[in-house]
Length: 178
Image (cartoon, rainbow, N blue to C red; front, side, top):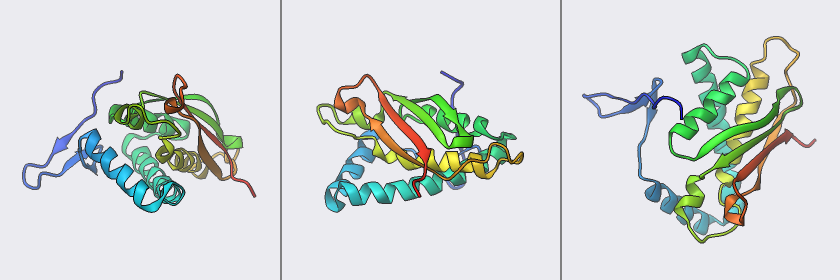
């Protein structure tokens, strides 16, 4: 795996930062227990839509900040995003294929934190990530300066999950339906 994540702790405030962004550090079981409690209270469909929109917005913001922080552009920002997610314990993410000009991508996720934290539970458990990939793809297209790679708005979905018996999870990014 790539080098470890840089974590800075402000001795005066206790605030943790990585790449100048404030961070929270919580145990996986704590996050997953809260996640499943909200899912049960709101219902899967409602909660998934809320997470999609929030994740989209957060990924877009993150990509913009990280591009400036590291002098990155285009798909290098998307790749950096997946690397940072992998370093933060969500699972191991990799791009199987990507074409920003057509707003298409396939992302593989191995060792998903949601699957690992819920042994024996089946179904699509990793839906929280879907909005992240659409937000990152739209940032790539919105930031394209050459005008050639700027593709249509995107959407993303969890196409398969390891909790359904697959070897790993796969997310598909595609153009937003009109």
